[in-house]
Image (cartoon, rainbow, N blue to C red; front, side, top):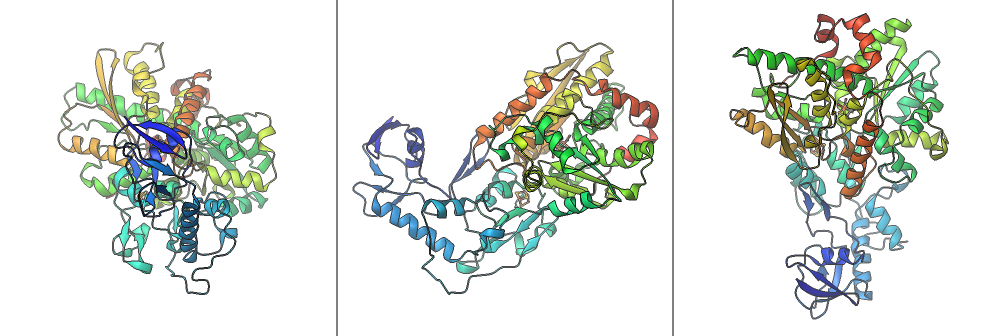
Length: 578
Ligand code: HC1
Ligand code: SF4
């Protein structure tokens, strides 16, 4: 170990550690902008480009960036000398000199790391380049993301995220000097690039350069329209994070308060995406059982492993990067889209609501869901998709005292769900839910122990073998698209590990870490707390297997007949396109 002194305090660190690492160890906060280290993922952005983290090192003439300077034995560091503070202020003034001054109306306002620093440093005047022209760039607006490069500070976090963690390669630095931007190849718009709309670049962008495409006011308009019946569905991961927007501890479950808030906002029916997640298990589970049976009967055309298909960024990814494997994923629609289809067929018919009168709003932890809802094959079954953050805005606008709301229940029938559907919100959950049902279908026995600890965790790629009767079911799990890519390449090369089923979620952590969730500002502990909350919700549910959901049973009895029926195929399944 190496000893260094920071602001008069000695600290021992391992060789290779940076000054920033050492400072963290003793609770000395050094401000950073470009630096981001999302532990347990491949997200380490060490650009050392913003220079906000400079510190004074005794014996050196120049200030050193703390994020990129390795410690040496006996080093004496000052993180708050006058020289340091002046340098940081100049860095900020330079950044702000080429930055729009529209903080009041910027979507990231309140969540912007540049704004936070300007506040901390008491910047009251931007002296440099005061009247000079600011470089401008066209806005790029997709279904999911707004790219405003005028607000880019070239920290390159998005580039690291998109290339290293997501292996998508949609964003990289182009041009030089004032014209430098981070953009897709040939500076095409995101929608024309290989972007999957996962939104992870938005999740790590420190400023308003990358934001989500908002739809709050479309929801307000729909709620105000007396001719419309407005139905809302909430994704599993939203309840484990929404509370953060109201100052509650990360990992606080707010299912009941969220439901109460949605009712007060004026939605006619407060339903749950989880209901549709149970339906997804019915369909995907049946597909898995069907493929396994055919496999055991020696059918040479059967495709194994089956891949989950509920994550829309993952669907976009395999459609563009694995066009030769389009017949491998499950054809089950995602729960969001199953919900839309069920609401506008089964439920609408049951309640006698004409399709054109119904507006389906989804609240999702995800930006790719906005894109998914717009895919033409889904026929706008989901009219509007908003994020967890947007729901928080709606609740605040409506002056609802969220923290003190009572717990309320979802409406029925599309609000009833099981623990199996709740765990969809975390990596490993979809496949665990599928196993709970497949086990009982295949063996005809009751599954006593529903917790499959071997499928849980935070490792980027995991695998486990689960005994289902006399079958050893080999399961793979990946979260983060670079991990997904590695698994998919194995499948392309002949599936050497003999996987039968693979779950893939595009975002690190699964939906709990989605691009539409409250900003975690690089704190991966927050993701873990949300994951724990999801498993707790599952544990506290009376019913924990999708096929036990009484309203799912009723729906199949009255409407779909059975999973993979003709009607189910028509409404609950989809196909993929390269
Ligand atoms: Fe997800 Fe899903 S779990 S994709 O992560 O299958 O977004 O939460 O809603 O559709 O149910 C997201 C979450 C979500 C779908 C479900
Ligand atoms: Fe890359 Fe995802 Fe951002 Fe698209 S949304 S640019 S895929 S990180």
